Length: 416
Image 1 (cartoon, one colour):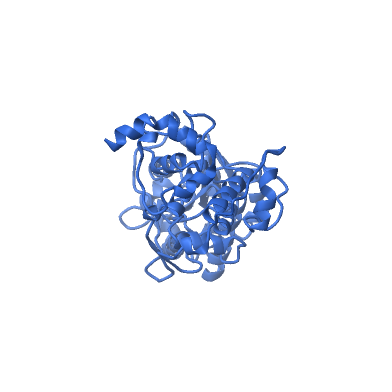
Image 2 (tube, rainbow, N blue to C red; image 1 turned 90 degrees about the horizontal axis):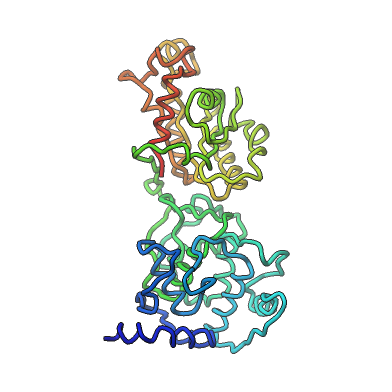
C-alpha cells in the first residue's frame, strides 16, 4: 500500500523537492530503498545498470537531476561548476547553514564565495566549466562533508592504491574515501584513475554512499606480500577490430612485426627497432599526447635483458606512470617477453629461456603492484620444452607470420 501511495504522489513529491534543497535535511542518511518515485526510470539508465540504485537515490533526494524528467546523462562528465554547486548545497544542508544562492550570471558565480569560505575549494578555479578529475572531486567531497560522516571502515595501507602515490596532492582525500567505503576503484586491481574525468553516475554513487552508510563498500587493501593481486585475463570470445580502435601498442621491433603481419589494423602503434624502457619516454610517448586511449599494450624487455633487475623494474614502473599521466583513463596491459627458439637459447648468453622466464616473473609481479593486467603471451607460444618452435621464427627471436597470428589471437581473446 505504501508503494502504491508513493506512486500516485510522484509529481507532488517532485515539486516539493524542487522548491528547496533545504528539505533534503529530512532525507535518509543511514538506510537505502529504491523508491517508487523512480519506478518509471530514465530512458538512458539501463534497468540492470549497477549504478541504478545510486541514481535513484540522488534523484529522489534531489541531490542530482537530469536535463529533463526522462534522462539522467549517466556517462556525461561532471564539471567543476556542477560539483561545486552540488557540494555547496550538500554542505549547507548538513551544517544547517541556511545560506541562499541567488541567481547570477554565469549561474555558478553564486556558489564561489561559499565554496571558498567553507574550503570546499582551496582557491579559485580558472575554468569552472571544465570537466573535473576524479582526484579533484574527492578533494572537494572530503572538504564538503563533516569528518564524522567518513569513519574508516576499511583497512587501506598508505601506498596500497596502485595508481595513487602518497606524494600526490589529492592522495589524502582519495585514501580517506577508500577507507570510508565511498570509492573502491575502477577495476579488479582497485586503481582509482585519479587524473581521469568523473562521470555523473560515479558522482551519484559517491553521494549515495556518503548519505546512506549501508551502501558503502567494505574491503581490505594492504601492502603485505600476499596482498598484491596480479590479474591475468582469462580466455574469452575473440574481439573484432572495432574493439581495438581505442588501443595503442608500445614496443620494439617485435611490435613492428605485429603491426605488419597481424590483423590488428585499427589500433595505433608506437614502436621502433631497439626501443626499450630506457628510451621509451623520449622516443615515443610524446606522440601519444592529445589522443585518448582506453587500452595500452606494452611489449618491452627483450632489449633490456642485460639490465640489472631492480633498475629494469624501476624504469618500467616510471614508464607506466608516464603513460598514465598522458592517458589517465587507460587500462594498461603488460605483455610478457616472448620465448626464443631452443637454438637461440643455447647459443646466447642473454636471449635464453632462463633470462626470459626471470624477467617475466618481474613483469608479472610489477603488473600486480602497478594495477596493470598481465598477458602471458609466452605460455601461448612455447612448445612442451618451453621454447618457441623453430618454424615460428626466422632468426630465433622474431616471429614468422604464423607466430604473429598466434600472438594476435591471444590478444583478441584475453581482455577485461
